[in-house]
Amino acid sequence: MVRSIAVFVGCCLLIAIPSAQSKPLKAPDVLVGAAEGDWPLFRGDALQTGVARTTLPDKLEIRWKVNLKKGIESTAAIVKDTVYIGCYDEHLHALDLKTGAQKWKIKLGPIKAPPSVYDGKVFVGDEDGMFYCVDAAKGAKLWDFEANAEITGGANFAGDNVIFGSQDASLYCLSIKTGKLVWKVKTEGPIYGSVAVANGATFVAGCDSHLHIIDVAKGAELAKVELSGQTLSTTAVLGDKVYVGNNNSDVQGIDLKKKSILWTYTPKRAQPFYSSPAITDQYVVAGSRDRHLHAVDRVKGTRVWSFDADEIVDSSPVIVGTRVYVGSSGGTLYVVDLTKGKEVQSLDLGGRITASPAVAHGCLVIGTTDGLLYCLGKKD
Image 1 (cartoon, rainbow, N blue to C red):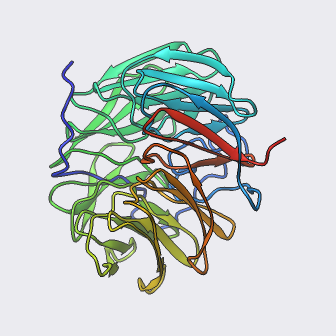
Image 2: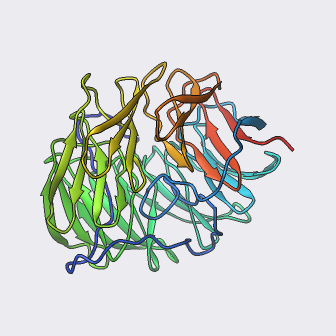
């Protein structure tokens, strides 16, 4: 097993699209084994929208804080009363959502990828290129699978299969039950982002700056769409449109019916978008390395507002009602008004924040690179 070196020179994104008949996309209400209001995947739902189906208090307070001792870049998953989080201490942790008390931990490997929870199982990859399936209740390993390079994106699910990407330039589809390979698609560059799945298809974009439409049942390419650049982020899907930021300093909207670019938004100070967008009917919101959080009109692709953060924003924003929650590399968690782009609250969490918020059941969970895991909400 060879640990790869992450070089940000080429990457892949994975998103869901409609079938050849261009049926409108619709994310399932909940994944198998999850409850309404859970956060089982990197961006909360199967289409990676970054929108929470819960509420948060007007003012966030620290409910609990746990020191995992090593850096946290993994984004948590929250299902029912349990928080699942990977850490550079080489463990996958399960913590009680209410108290932060440890339920179990299992040593796997250095984990940057967000865990995904499905049907009583936790799926996560590590930087040694191993992908694991763990019993969500007991913390026992059920199976593992070896890729040829590190895994930094989260998994998603299609029927009885789990799909994830690796920096060995491959998209893998495995049997959930056995961990055996169902199919593998090679790309022209490493895959960094998480996977979204709907209506039997997914996209892969490689170093050729194209979105490749892949049939999830067969692993066969159906079509492709040219982009303005490579990407490290995860795409978001709403209806028959797709939204993604890239290393060419653009956020792009893509029409899946026409298989063409709708619009391209480029900020004045051009810097890459590593942050994955959150989307509503009106807005596309993403952080940039230009130290701003940007809101773009979802239909027109024009600037609505830009919020000035204290440092670069690689963390991916989460929308809860009329507010946006995002971390910065300066260690600040920001709460920003969605319509005005004005700061509502900020909290200094200490270490750099490259992980993204996970929001469920009235709580926001996020970690820092100094190893602190926070649960914020309303104190009991």
